[in-house]
Length: 117
Image (cartoon, rainbow, N blue to C red; front, side, top):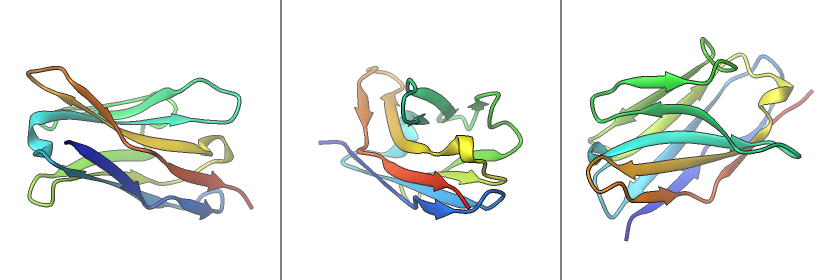
């Protein structure tokens, strides 16, 4: 089965940086549209960023210029580089994969990101 495992979350001060990783097993990351979502306490889950197999990217307005999504097909891993972090970025970040042809959807368990001084 396809499994997504996130890592890299933690506690960081405002203005700091973190890089999240999403390791994909059971399939190739190259055949999925990959995305990062987040859910903050008391808020709905929101899309943070997506990247296609053609490396086209899309970002939420709230993270544009600060976050960068990328993929490494050789390592079967998707990354989310987060810079200039703000307390409002505090959330559980989940990795998502959608098969570009079949449309099946997979989710990771999430990794906690806390931005606080």
